[in-house]
Length: 397
Ligand SMILES: *Cc1c(COP(=O)(O)O)cnc(C)c1O
Image (cartoon, rainbow, N blue to C red):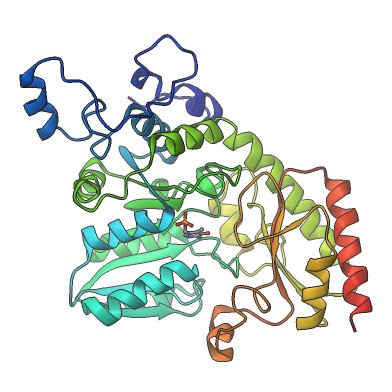
């Protein structure tokens, strides 16, 4: 039952009815199986959708509780948690695409999602149109074909922070009967609720902001009852179930989601503005800056801030980028994002070192690009750390 609660009250209280004990914090039901009180119950639970006390691949109080919270946060009828973000995406593909279907997706996209799509192209006969400029609605409209079955968006996108107009793309999907799916990892439901703009599904890597402490890998699918139950039937036969301990950690992280995300976004807004004035910086990509090409859309569809991911480009390129990262002490080198700690990545010398130049160009990855996941640390400490990075980058030349 939807309640008019804010995100923090929701995260703390929404799934409470799944806790059958008096413990204020739901215990971890670290069990694969539950006792059946009567034989009849065995038959009932085996046929039920997500029975919370049968066998953990079907469901578990910890996953049911966190799903209730995530559904409320996304404004969805139902949510399903999975063993990782990629498991969630693979389930959505498996559930809603088949050989010969056509998919529309942005060219600059999370690498794992691109690899999933390429695998479907090579092995499952999927055809794909890649959108180059996600701001261009004509490009989205022109990409649609009679056999288009899914439109995939990321907004803001990984790694370029490009924006997509969710309401406009959802309207295109509705008009042509195409399922629309948003990877909502970057904004989290605190900043963007894709279903509110007419999207069918909001999916995410819960590993990032939702769990928020870089200590758990998880994924989520949120949408209509019918769509999420379709995915649940697939988890039952394919098995990417979230472990009870991981579900519990995810729920614990969600209780501070709004606090963490707002603090990190405030930090990011201040740092993006500060970075603009640094002489070694050629460009800053942040949707909260009026200079960002997607700023107008971001201002319209993002609430309470613009997220905590910043891309910025050093004038001096590859070697400077490497030295910059290696000089940092507070900001940690790492590929992930969305945790309480700030993380930085230099794609050209790290994740994309072996990527072909033309692919890097398509993904918007230049030699001096740094991808910065701003954490919740104290702003002066982050600025002092970045200053160290700039000094090292200057000396590298
Ligand atoms: C991390 C990430 C994923 C994949 O999620 P996992 O939990 O690592 O499987 C998907 N999309 C985006 C935008 C991500 O950042």
